[in-house]
Length: 179
Image (cartoon, rainbow, N blue to C red; front, side, top):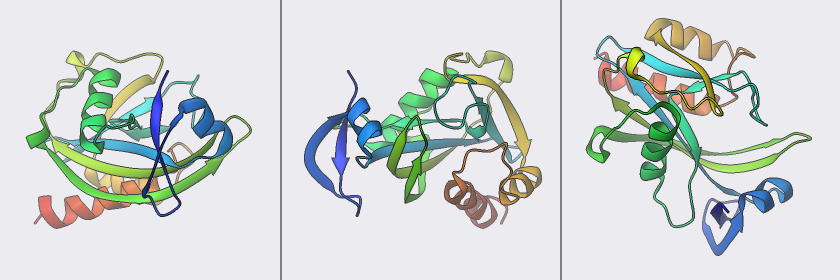
C-alpha cells in the first residue's frame, strides 16, 4: 500500500499520511516529482506515458516522475522514479532542483492535488540501454532544445499539462546551460 504525506493548500505538511486511493479519490494534497534529463547536445529526454495511465494517457512528459512516498525526500523520489520507469541511474550529486508549484487536475478517474518539485540531471544516455517500464511508459525520445521549447510553449495536447515544469526547464537551460 502506497502512503503519501498529506499537505495543506500551502504545500506544508499536515502530519498525516494518506493512501494513494484516499489522496486521489478525495483530492488530498500530496507531493509529486519530475526529473528531466539533458544530454551534452542540449537535448531533453522525453517519455510518452502508457495508454493505460489514468491521467494523461499517451501524453509526453519529462524523463521520469511520480509520487513522493511518505517520509521520502523529493530528490530521492525523482531518482527512484527515473530508475523504475527507464532504468537510468543518477546520483544525488548529479541532480539539481529547478522549481516547484501547486497543481490540481480533476477528472472522472482521479483528483490530483500535487505539490510538484522538478529537477534536472545532465547525462548522456544511450536509448538502446534504456529499460522501459511498459506499465508506465510507451516510448522515449530525445528532443533538441529548440524543438522542446517550441513544443512545450505551444501547449500541445500531446503533452502532459506540466507547463510550469517545462517552462522552468527552458529557463534553466537558457540561463545556465546555453550561456
